[in-house]
Image (tube, rainbow, N blue to C red; front, side):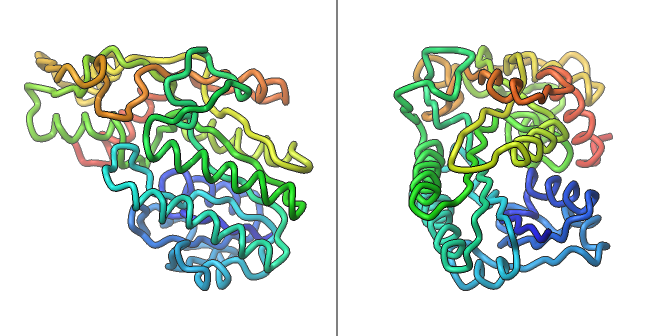
Length: 316
Protein backbone atom coordinates (compact mmCIF):
# COMPACT_ATOMS: atom_id res chain seq x y z
CA UNK A 1 0.00 0.00 0.00
CA UNK A 2 1.29 3.45 -0.92
CA UNK A 3 0.67 6.27 1.56
CA UNK A 4 0.99 10.03 1.04
CA UNK A 5 2.01 12.01 4.12
CA UNK A 6 1.63 15.75 3.65
CA UNK A 7 3.91 17.61 6.02
CA UNK A 8 5.97 14.45 6.29
CA UNK A 9 9.20 16.34 7.01
CA UNK A 10 7.69 17.92 10.09
CA UNK A 11 7.74 16.71 13.68
CA UNK A 12 4.80 14.30 13.83
CA UNK A 13 4.82 13.65 10.09
CA UNK A 14 8.43 12.44 9.98
CA UNK A 15 7.88 10.02 12.85
CA UNK A 16 4.80 8.72 11.03
CA UNK A 17 6.86 8.28 7.83
CA UNK A 18 9.45 6.26 9.75
CA UNK A 19 6.79 4.00 11.22
CA UNK A 20 5.10 3.34 7.88
CA UNK A 21 8.43 2.43 6.29
CA UNK A 22 9.29 0.14 9.20
CA UNK A 23 5.99 -1.66 8.64
CA UNK A 24 6.60 -2.19 4.92
CA UNK A 25 4.51 0.54 3.31
CA UNK A 26 5.55 2.67 0.36
CA UNK A 27 5.55 6.31 1.42
CA UNK A 28 5.45 9.60 -0.46
CA UNK A 29 6.21 12.76 1.50
CA UNK A 30 5.00 16.16 0.29
CA UNK A 31 6.49 19.09 2.20
CA UNK A 32 7.49 22.68 1.42
CA UNK A 33 10.12 22.61 4.20
CA UNK A 34 8.80 25.80 5.79
CA UNK A 35 8.70 24.05 9.16
CA UNK A 36 9.95 20.54 8.39
CA UNK A 37 13.54 19.62 7.59
CA UNK A 38 15.39 17.08 5.49
CA UNK A 39 17.26 16.11 8.64
CA UNK A 40 13.99 14.74 10.03
CA UNK A 41 13.89 12.41 7.00
CA UNK A 42 17.51 11.23 7.24
CA UNK A 43 16.46 7.66 7.98
CA UNK A 44 13.59 7.59 5.46
CA UNK A 45 15.81 8.80 2.63
CA UNK A 46 17.82 5.59 2.88
CA UNK A 47 14.76 3.52 1.93
CA UNK A 48 13.85 2.60 -1.66
CA UNK A 49 10.21 2.61 -0.56
CA UNK A 50 10.34 6.34 0.19
CA UNK A 51 9.93 9.31 -2.14
CA UNK A 52 10.26 12.96 -1.17
CA UNK A 53 8.58 15.70 -3.18
CA UNK A 54 9.19 19.32 -2.31
CA UNK A 55 5.86 20.97 -2.88
CA UNK A 56 3.08 22.97 -1.32
CA UNK A 57 -0.50 21.98 -0.53
CA UNK A 58 -1.53 25.49 -1.58
CA UNK A 59 -0.80 24.32 -5.14
CA UNK A 60 -3.11 21.57 -6.40
CA UNK A 61 -0.59 20.47 -9.02
CA UNK A 62 1.92 19.57 -6.33
CA UNK A 63 -0.66 17.42 -4.55
CA UNK A 64 -1.70 15.71 -7.80
CA UNK A 65 1.92 14.78 -8.47
CA UNK A 66 2.47 13.41 -4.98
CA UNK A 67 -0.85 11.58 -4.61
CA UNK A 68 -0.62 9.58 -7.85
CA UNK A 69 -1.16 5.86 -7.12
CA UNK A 70 -1.58 6.49 -3.37
CA UNK A 71 -4.42 4.76 -1.55
CA UNK A 72 -4.56 6.90 1.58
CA UNK A 73 -3.51 10.40 2.62
CA UNK A 74 -2.29 11.33 6.08
CA UNK A 75 -2.75 15.07 5.99
CA UNK A 76 -0.32 16.61 8.49
CA UNK A 77 0.81 19.69 6.54
CA UNK A 78 -0.17 22.91 8.32
CA UNK A 79 1.22 25.99 9.92
CA UNK A 80 1.99 24.63 13.41
CA UNK A 81 2.25 27.90 15.36
CA UNK A 82 -0.82 28.62 17.48
CA UNK A 83 0.61 32.03 18.38
CA UNK A 84 1.01 33.16 14.77
CA UNK A 85 -0.54 36.58 14.41
CA UNK A 86 -1.21 36.38 10.67
CA UNK A 87 -4.70 34.86 10.08
CA UNK A 88 -4.11 34.55 6.32
CA UNK A 89 -1.25 32.10 6.99
CA UNK A 90 -3.64 29.77 8.80
CA UNK A 91 -6.32 30.20 6.14
CA UNK A 92 -4.01 29.44 3.22
CA UNK A 93 -1.91 26.68 4.79
CA UNK A 94 -4.67 24.98 6.74
CA UNK A 95 -8.10 25.62 5.24
CA UNK A 96 -7.24 26.22 1.58
CA UNK A 97 -4.56 23.51 1.70
CA UNK A 98 -7.03 20.97 3.09
CA UNK A 99 -9.63 21.91 0.46
CA UNK A 100 -7.00 21.31 -2.24
CA UNK A 101 -6.13 17.91 -0.76
CA UNK A 102 -9.79 16.89 -0.72
CA UNK A 103 -10.34 18.03 -4.30
CA UNK A 104 -7.33 16.01 -5.48
CA UNK A 105 -8.68 12.99 -3.62
CA UNK A 106 -12.00 13.42 -5.39
CA UNK A 107 -10.33 13.65 -8.79
CA UNK A 108 -8.04 10.65 -8.19
CA UNK A 109 -10.73 8.60 -6.42
CA UNK A 110 -8.72 8.33 -3.19
CA UNK A 111 -11.18 7.58 -0.39
CA UNK A 112 -9.08 7.50 2.78
CA UNK A 113 -7.88 10.58 4.72
CA UNK A 114 -6.49 10.99 8.23
CA UNK A 115 -6.28 14.61 9.35
CA UNK A 116 -4.08 16.03 12.10
CA UNK A 117 -6.50 18.20 14.03
CA UNK A 118 -5.93 19.75 17.44
CA UNK A 119 -7.26 20.10 20.97
CA UNK A 120 -7.56 23.83 20.21
CA UNK A 121 -10.87 23.19 18.41
CA UNK A 122 -12.53 23.03 21.86
CA UNK A 123 -11.41 26.50 22.98
CA UNK A 124 -11.93 27.12 26.70
CA UNK A 125 -13.87 23.95 27.42
CA UNK A 126 -16.00 23.95 30.57
CA UNK A 127 -15.82 20.16 30.82
CA UNK A 128 -12.36 18.73 31.59
CA UNK A 129 -11.37 16.07 30.57
CA UNK A 130 -13.10 17.15 27.36
CA UNK A 131 -14.89 14.46 25.29
CA UNK A 132 -15.33 14.48 21.53
CA UNK A 133 -19.05 15.27 21.80
CA UNK A 134 -18.46 18.42 23.83
CA UNK A 135 -20.40 21.38 22.42
CA UNK A 136 -20.50 24.07 21.32
CA UNK A 137 -16.99 24.15 19.90
CA UNK A 138 -15.66 27.70 20.32
CA UNK A 139 -12.00 28.01 19.26
CA UNK A 140 -10.24 31.04 20.76
CA UNK A 141 -7.35 31.14 18.24
CA UNK A 142 -7.34 31.45 14.46
CA UNK A 143 -5.27 28.24 14.45
CA UNK A 144 -8.02 26.37 16.33
CA UNK A 145 -10.68 27.84 14.07
CA UNK A 146 -8.77 26.73 10.98
CA UNK A 147 -8.47 23.17 12.29
CA UNK A 148 -12.20 23.03 13.05
CA UNK A 149 -12.93 24.35 9.55
CA UNK A 150 -10.82 21.55 8.08
CA UNK A 151 -12.73 18.97 10.11
CA UNK A 152 -16.00 20.32 8.73
CA UNK A 153 -14.72 20.11 5.15
CA UNK A 154 -13.57 16.51 5.62
CA UNK A 155 -16.90 15.57 7.19
CA UNK A 156 -18.77 17.05 4.22
CA UNK A 157 -16.59 15.26 1.65
CA UNK A 158 -16.98 11.99 3.57
CA UNK A 159 -20.76 12.27 3.43
CA UNK A 160 -21.02 13.50 -0.17
CA UNK A 161 -18.28 11.49 -1.87
CA UNK A 162 -18.04 8.41 0.33
CA UNK A 163 -14.64 9.20 1.84
CA UNK A 164 -13.41 7.51 4.98
CA UNK A 165 -12.27 10.46 7.09
CA UNK A 166 -10.66 10.74 10.52
CA UNK A 167 -9.95 13.93 12.45
CA UNK A 168 -7.43 13.27 15.21
CA UNK A 169 -7.57 15.94 17.89
CA UNK A 170 -4.07 15.80 19.29
CA UNK A 171 -3.07 17.09 22.70
CA UNK A 172 0.45 18.54 22.97
CA UNK A 173 2.59 15.96 21.19
CA UNK A 174 6.23 15.99 22.23
CA UNK A 175 9.42 14.03 21.56
CA UNK A 176 12.65 14.03 19.55
CA UNK A 177 12.71 16.47 16.56
CA UNK A 178 10.29 18.87 18.28
CA UNK A 179 11.14 22.44 17.27
CA UNK A 180 8.34 24.54 18.76
CA UNK A 181 6.39 24.74 21.98
CA UNK A 182 7.21 25.32 25.63
CA UNK A 183 9.93 22.66 26.13
CA UNK A 184 11.88 23.81 23.09
CA UNK A 185 11.45 27.46 24.05
CA UNK A 186 12.64 26.88 27.62
CA UNK A 187 15.79 25.09 26.47
CA UNK A 188 16.68 27.88 24.06
CA UNK A 189 16.06 30.56 26.68
CA UNK A 190 18.27 28.75 29.20
CA UNK A 191 21.01 28.29 26.60
CA UNK A 192 21.14 32.08 26.29
CA UNK A 193 20.85 32.74 30.03
CA UNK A 194 21.20 29.76 32.39
CA UNK A 195 20.41 31.86 35.45
CA UNK A 196 16.95 33.25 34.66
CA UNK A 197 14.01 31.63 32.85
CA UNK A 198 11.16 33.75 31.56
CA UNK A 199 7.81 31.94 31.67
CA UNK A 200 4.96 33.35 29.58
CA UNK A 201 1.74 33.62 31.57
CA UNK A 202 1.40 33.02 35.29
CA UNK A 203 2.88 29.50 35.19
CA UNK A 204 -0.30 27.75 36.32
CA UNK A 205 -1.37 26.83 32.79
CA UNK A 206 -2.09 23.10 32.87
CA UNK A 207 -2.22 20.89 29.80
CA UNK A 208 -1.92 17.30 28.64
CA UNK A 209 1.21 16.01 26.87
CA UNK A 210 1.66 12.82 24.85
CA UNK A 211 4.93 11.27 23.74
CA UNK A 212 5.41 10.95 19.99
CA UNK A 213 5.66 7.14 20.00
CA UNK A 214 2.27 6.95 21.71
CA UNK A 215 0.83 9.46 19.25
CA UNK A 216 1.96 7.45 16.23
CA UNK A 217 0.72 4.21 17.80
CA UNK A 218 -2.70 5.76 18.43
CA UNK A 219 -2.84 7.22 14.91
CA UNK A 220 -2.24 3.90 13.17
CA UNK A 221 -4.41 2.00 15.65
CA UNK A 222 -7.53 4.07 15.08
CA UNK A 223 -6.91 4.31 11.31
CA UNK A 224 -7.03 0.53 11.12
CA UNK A 225 -10.13 0.37 13.30
CA UNK A 226 -12.12 3.02 11.42
CA UNK A 227 -14.10 1.53 8.55
CA UNK A 228 -16.37 4.16 7.00
CA UNK A 229 -17.69 7.70 7.18
CA UNK A 230 -16.27 10.53 9.27
CA UNK A 231 -15.31 10.47 12.93
CA UNK A 232 -13.18 12.47 15.36
CA UNK A 233 -10.97 11.08 18.12
CA UNK A 234 -9.03 12.74 20.91
CA UNK A 235 -5.39 11.64 21.04
CA UNK A 236 -3.79 12.40 24.41
CA UNK A 237 -2.88 11.15 27.85
CA UNK A 238 -4.89 10.57 31.03
CA UNK A 239 -3.38 13.47 32.98
CA UNK A 240 -1.87 16.97 32.69
CA UNK A 241 1.06 19.05 33.89
CA UNK A 242 1.66 22.75 34.63
CA UNK A 243 4.08 25.08 32.86
CA UNK A 244 5.99 25.58 36.11
CA UNK A 245 6.44 21.83 36.46
CA UNK A 246 7.74 21.68 32.89
CA UNK A 247 10.20 24.46 33.67
CA UNK A 248 11.61 22.46 36.58
CA UNK A 249 11.92 19.33 34.41
CA UNK A 250 13.83 21.26 31.72
CA UNK A 251 16.18 22.79 34.31
CA UNK A 252 16.91 19.32 35.67
CA UNK A 253 17.47 17.88 32.18
CA UNK A 254 19.99 20.66 31.49
CA UNK A 255 21.69 19.99 34.85
CA UNK A 256 21.32 23.55 35.97
CA UNK A 257 20.88 24.88 39.49
CA UNK A 258 19.77 28.11 41.15
CA UNK A 259 17.68 29.14 38.15
CA UNK A 260 15.32 32.00 38.90
CA UNK A 261 11.87 31.67 37.36
CA UNK A 262 10.24 34.88 36.13
CA UNK A 263 6.57 34.74 35.11
CA UNK A 264 5.29 37.51 32.85
CA UNK A 265 1.81 37.37 34.35
CA UNK A 266 0.37 36.81 30.91
CA UNK A 267 -2.90 38.06 29.45
CA UNK A 268 -6.58 37.34 30.00
CA UNK A 269 -6.18 35.65 33.38
CA UNK A 270 -2.61 34.35 33.16
CA UNK A 271 -2.51 32.94 29.63
CA UNK A 272 0.78 32.94 27.75
CA UNK A 273 -0.73 34.95 24.87
CA UNK A 274 -4.12 35.83 23.41
CA UNK A 275 -5.64 32.63 22.08
CA UNK A 276 -3.74 30.38 24.52
CA UNK A 277 -6.02 27.77 26.09
CA UNK A 278 -5.03 27.86 29.76
CA UNK A 279 -6.38 24.48 30.83
CA UNK A 280 -6.55 21.49 28.48
CA UNK A 281 -7.00 17.81 29.11
CA UNK A 282 -8.76 15.61 26.61
CA UNK A 283 -10.95 12.68 27.49
CA UNK A 284 -9.49 9.65 25.71
CA UNK A 285 -12.17 7.18 26.81
CA UNK A 286 -13.52 6.85 23.27
CA UNK A 287 -10.07 5.88 21.99
CA UNK A 288 -9.35 3.60 24.96
CA UNK A 289 -12.60 1.77 24.28
CA UNK A 290 -11.08 0.64 20.96
CA UNK A 291 -8.23 -1.07 22.83
CA UNK A 292 -5.48 1.58 22.88
CA UNK A 293 -3.63 2.88 25.95
CA UNK A 294 -0.78 5.40 26.26
CA UNK A 295 2.50 4.05 27.62
CA UNK A 296 3.64 7.36 29.10
CA UNK A 297 1.89 9.98 31.20
CA UNK A 298 2.37 13.73 30.70
CA UNK A 299 5.32 14.05 33.09
CA UNK A 300 7.14 11.09 31.53
CA UNK A 301 6.52 12.47 28.03
CA UNK A 302 7.98 15.86 29.02
CA UNK A 303 10.98 14.25 30.76
CA UNK A 304 11.80 12.05 27.76
CA UNK A 305 11.46 15.00 25.41
CA UNK A 306 13.55 17.38 27.51
CA UNK A 307 16.42 14.88 27.65
CA UNK A 308 16.18 14.21 23.90
CA UNK A 309 16.13 17.89 22.93
CA UNK A 310 18.99 18.78 25.27
CA UNK A 311 21.06 16.25 23.35
CA UNK A 312 19.78 17.27 19.89
CA UNK A 313 20.36 20.97 20.51
CA UNK A 314 23.90 20.43 21.69
CA UNK A 315 23.42 21.66 25.24
CA UNK A 316 26.55 21.08 27.32
